[in-house]
Image 1 (cartoon, rainbow, N blue to C red):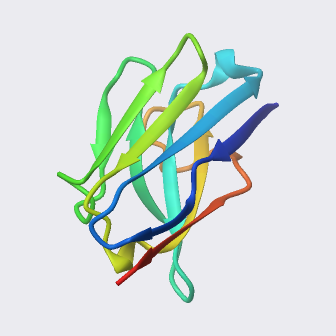
Image 2 (cartoon, rainbow, N blue to C red):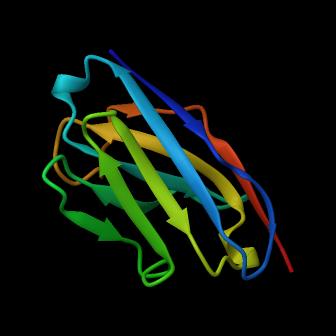
Length: 119
């Protein structure tokens, strides 16, 4: 089993920045891809960004150029730096981890952290 604990959500004005962190513990040797999903009210959960153990990154088109995902394998932690935030970025952000490479079918989920962007 793998446990994921997120931190760093909150309330920010449009144009501002937030940094999310997700620390993994447990059977982390089995994990390859890690990253973030988000779910806004009334919408489906969507993949925001993913990074493999080797450092390959993937972003949703809606966040490219504004969000940066990074990973510290020594600390078993993944980060999401969110800049130029927009009200439409408001959602619950979930850390996810997968034994595979794409993070399309996560094996593990965090509890979620709320990000609210005011206009």
